Image (cartoon, rainbow, N blue to C red; front, side, top):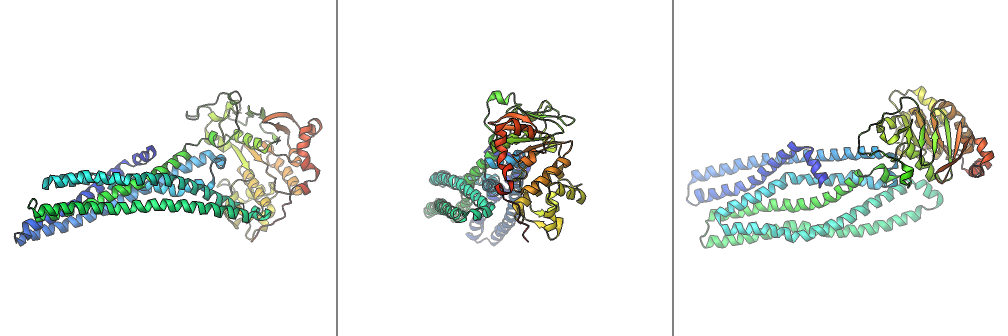
Length: 581
């Protein structure tokens, strides 16, 4: 509810204007029954044609004014809803950018897509209550006051009847909220599963698992369909109630008014007016019931949005560490107070004891790949930790500064759709010569040469038209083209053959000469080119030295890299698949 209130506070004058138009429109609905009653009593009943003509003209003018108010109400509420959608999309996009690459460890892509798609729309629909919703409440009070002037008993029926309608529909709305919440959660999970299946379709087909996952997806889909039917059943009862109950209420009040007209308690014109007032009242009642239904959906959607906005880097990744390992960590809610190092400086991770020397190519061989990923997240400030940069807390430095100077390049990072040139270009100033040089450093010249239009060839999302090794080399070229002060590479050659890997190792050292580079890998070809290698075991650095020194002195390190050095072309599949047209 606070999130919904924030969306309202972001556009107060527009919401106020929508409330005024909505209230005027709702009250205007009750003006015409009064004018018709006057036309009946003052003109038609007594045969006064002049009075009848004046009141009929007033009815026409009121209809034109009501049409204008309806147009302005709808126009204003459309602006309010679209503004709310845009603001929700903006805050979600900023949050996704802030959390970065560690988000998939907590939420699936399908869940994020559901929040960024349908949930934003449901939240925006709730803001309709700020216009016609407020108008419905005011119109309800106005009609009750007017009816009191005609017949207090009828006004009492209206004042009591509308809350009774709410009590009747209330249990259905609560049931709808429970069913809708479960359904939306499972819908997001199923969407995430379908996204994962599509993304890994080639791998599933290769291992013969496509049919198995298809059957599992179909089974989950059938179960979700059954829950969807239950939600639809409750929805149908609510929709029926929003039409039937106001209609029955109208019939009851008109029946009472007709009995009063027969006894002479009210006039024929007043009977017509009562019918018009109560018929008009069905519109505010319908809006209130419909608004209650939208409020339930919107609250569920807002809870999902807030849950995503509440995520912090600590929530979505990083190893479990003790307070002693973490050390004093700056409060992330406080403004940044630490200046970044003016010149290239050492990075230090207290959890593992690793110190990355400025200007050197440092290799890290981890027994557990998860430990390597966690180390990269701490050094790149994707999780809150006690890591330091030049002796200063990394979490205390402005995040924009960290992102601009420290780049963590995952071997499976996302490739957006576009031409190969657009995919590679890290900065608007990068020209073709720089792109070509980066491709050469990543041993990816053949990727561009094999495409029909070279750098101008369109590539689809995730670059599925390229082989796994080609995609990996394109990612490496993109990271090199960014020329960060600190480049952290996560297993950058895991999908290429040994000959290509040897070329990359030589060229990478040349391309990054004099700049800080961290290689998180177990490949002896890469580690052999590093200035310094660290052996990471059980989240601690147990040995450091050159690759040759560790091979000679550390049996654990020797065993770790032996699987790659024994017969690399047999142990790992060669990257022989070319680009598909």
